[in-house]
Length: 372
Ligand SMILES: C[S@@+](CC[C@H](N)C(=O)[O-])C[C@H]1O[C@@H](n2cnc3c(N)ncnc32)[C@H](O)[C@@H]1O
Image (tube, rainbow, N blue to C red; front, side, top):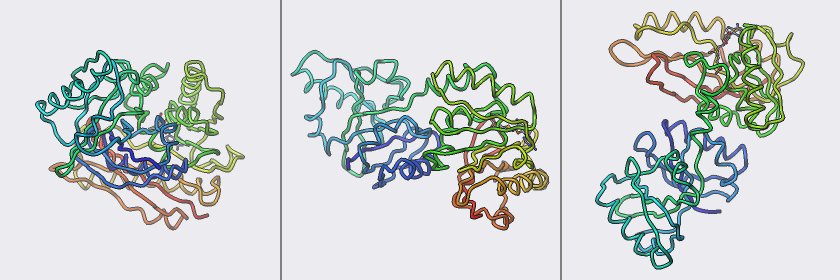
């Protein structure tokens, strides 16, 4: 077991849930020792984990950096490895004077070996995109975590690739910014399903964002949508994925109303991961009455969907499903409880919110187990 820190992305609470699921999914033995939650892109956790985490890390959607912890206190700087070019990232302290002082100190020490330089990132910490552009991993990122009068010193050993996620989003032939889920979130949801190998279905597949992720991760991907146009578009996107990412697997795609899955698939699934139809785009924030009405109407579709899920899922299968929650006029939010899920055999294990500023809808992500 090694000591690492992980720098979390936009939604730290969701990232931690993903990390726990990820640990079980790949048997990485992650133990979270400390949580330092300060906001988007600067929150971090201190963990113990098997070294294999380095191999799998790139498949996390909600994390930015994996930092190998070298030691405590400024003395640990002595143990940093040489790099011709490096930068510094500070978490828990955003004072540029501290950044510069530590940078000079690191430079002094590395200079004993050979010439070295450091560069200034946009903030007191470097984001993965900046690191990649500067030549990571040859270019190093030395990280200082400030916590109650103590500093942890480490070196970034892995990062997640924002350019890959961006490519998956905007370079595919069919792009629908309003309709589709961000690839980052698709990745998180696939991890929340905790399936390492097996058959996974997205029964509201749209243009196929979740399917792309399933295929990239080597899972058996199945998709359906009741709109034939969406299925054609998903097929085009997946064909593109095959060429661009050199994956061999293909998805089985069917035109199918979600309430008739049994008629469309012979397969039994280990998980369903999906973002369903969530109603018409909202022009403004809703009143409580409007929100209740919209949620109630959608629940009719969702009830039928879950009845149908029960027909095609294996026992103990996972369902990761996005229900809509609503931002309300004058503040607050409407987040519905659905006791009927239990009645249909679905135990709600976890719920996580994901806010998307552009949207007035909030994603209320449910992780469920089908008890059969
Ligand atoms: C929000 S989109 C899903 C987006 C998709 N997860 C993605 O990221 O590309 C919802 C999809 O549900 C489909 N849909 C709506 N009602 C349906 C039903 N009763 N059965 C199957 N699909 C349905 C729509 O055609 C639409 O493509």
